[in-house]
Amino acid sequence: MGTFSWTHLLIIALLFVLLFGAKRLPDAARGLGRSLRIFKSEVGQMQSESATPANPAATPAPPQQLPASAPQTQAPIADPQQSHKSL
Image (tube, rainbow, N blue to C red):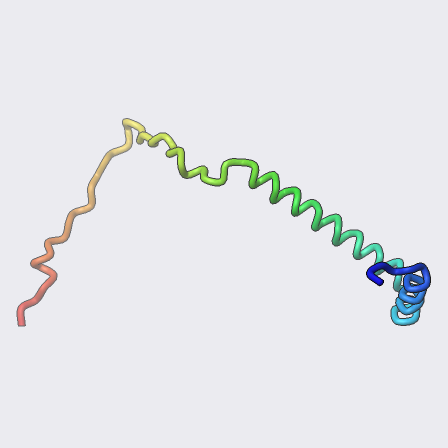
């Protein structure tokens, strides 16, 4: 009861031909094949990405040094008491 016999498969094939037409079935099969190919490549890409280390931030990058000729200026710090006005 759990498997299809050849008659069941024949009836299903005839229903597909009647519903979609004989001209559209090859295009539908091509589209399904392309979709499966894309899905397979995406799954493979996801698996290859999961095999690489997932946390690249765990190893810190070396600090970058500024060139010696670059002037190092600091912005002036605003006085917090000047920003408050008395009422």
